[in-house]
Length: 204
Image (tube, rainbow, N blue to C red; front, side, top):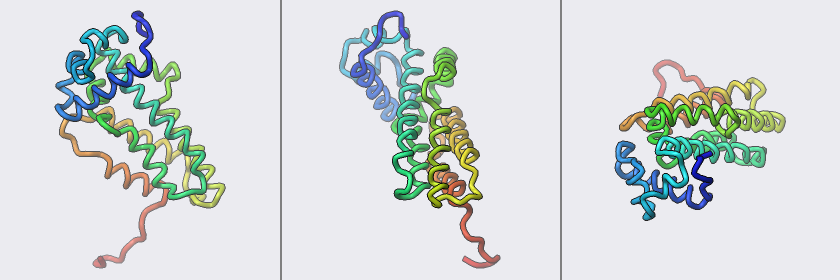
């Protein structure tokens, strides 16, 4: 918590959304407290009135987006028996890459104070990768009971692989890196549905 007080949710979201727009339009290098407040069309001191500093702001933005993905994962239990299992799991994994997620996570990892703030918050129980992994595991177990996921699939291992890959891609991203969404979709499909049918050599 910032010693300067607690930000109201609407102010936090206004600043977070402005930061994402700056990154999407100009890249992570353009993200500063001044560029955020200018984009949000608010007083220059507003960001520092609600956060201890710019590092805390960047960290809290990452944590907020992690929490959104965790909430999406928690809602998986309501989808058991409906639609495509792979699609549901994929949607949760890709939620971590929504908007400027990759660029902002990459920026946070280059700022030691921001990275430490994120690690401390997650260790203290802030919703993040562990919550997402647990929710995916529970969902796949439910779908297995319904016969929609093969018994040969190990839900805990699938969840770990999906979340671990997403974490790796987020924490090692850099400006201009290939978009990881296609690789994530392929990974989820392979883990949940298994490899496609094998082909004879020389066949198309």
